Amino acid sequence: MKNQGKTGIKSKGEIKTVAEKNRIVNTIRDTILERDTFLLLGHKDPDTDCIASLVAFALLLNKFNKEVTIYLASAVMAQFSYLLAICKYNGISVVYGKLGSVKSFSSVIILDTPKPDMIARNDEIISLMDDPRICKIEIDHHLAADSEYAGDSGCCLVDEASSTCELIGYLLLKLSYQKERFTKIDFFTRNLALAVLTGIVGDSQMGRYLKTSREKFYYRIFSEIFDQLLVEKTDKNSKNLSSMEAVFDVIQNFSVQEKHCFDGIMALKNTSRSIHYICMDREKSAEFFKTYEVELIINVSKAAADTLAEDCGKLGLVVYYDDPSLSGFVQFRLRRSAKFLHTDLRTVLTGLNIENGGGHPGAIGFRVKKEDIQDIEAYTMDIVKQIEALVEDPAA
Image (cartoon, rainbow, N blue to C red; front, side):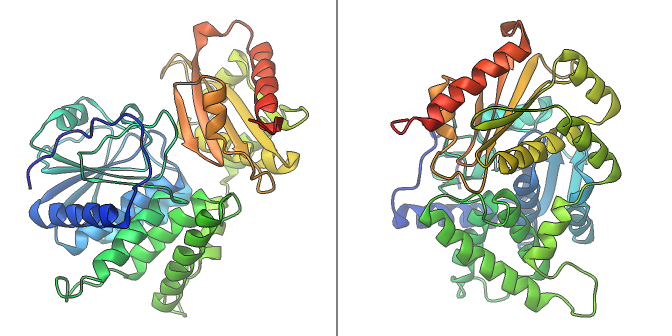
């Protein structure tokens, strides 16, 4: 199959018809059949859905005896060790930082990444992305106004969903219906069900943060399918994860170090009318980055935003300066509570005229250049007031 070129469409949008979705599924199927070597990419600082979708798609490719490499910019959190163990067990290569001796790829798969500049990459990967001979497939559920396609035209399974893993689950179901072509392939092995279920329950917090009836309907369908598969295919006498509740418990668990970091961040809690928030100034941010790894702080800050939102009943916000060695930005992470579903947080990005950000209805993140902020506490308070005006105004 020839490379079809970039989509030429800036903002991502829903797939309009079932027929179009079927064509995309079949194009992805044909690419898998015709290509031999695949590089899988997610976004920087990958979360549960991103890591789970990387592993799930790698396992799918493994069923076709393809050569698969997952690229990660750095080591992931300990909670996801069981997913990486699945890769090792199935002979799937996971590389960190540099591709090393693995240089040749016929296809790149971009997963759970809102836009190209958020892809975890290095100079080697940038060259691969610019190579027109390499096919780029994209699977993603982020449809924010500033989202942008990274895959080739006709190769983007990008649609409204509770998670990217839900879309992979959809792809698996569609392939399983083509029994005449895949008579010897079992698309629903235990490890594949486990990986898909991890992303589905992790990104939606067991469905608590879903807003629309459509989101809830498809979440229920796919979580029930893969939960049942996991139950059926797990040995009852083993200690392996055997239900979505067990999976959710594992990915929610903190290590001792994470708990210490979380408690330190939460000690900085402030409250406003509709937002509980934490603002770490330069000194406090530097102190945390000196004590903890970057990935740990990023993941714990997301958990802190979740906790703040639930405590408030509406919204939670965490603000901190990036590690000085990485970039010149201040990070903002906003999460809504399970009780505050009337607002799509992506509209906050539009309302604040934020270009460097993205997310999904229940959680967003954005960055502001350090030099644009003179007083971080005053700036955060102003942002809080603006967000409250947006979410509390019925016309917003």
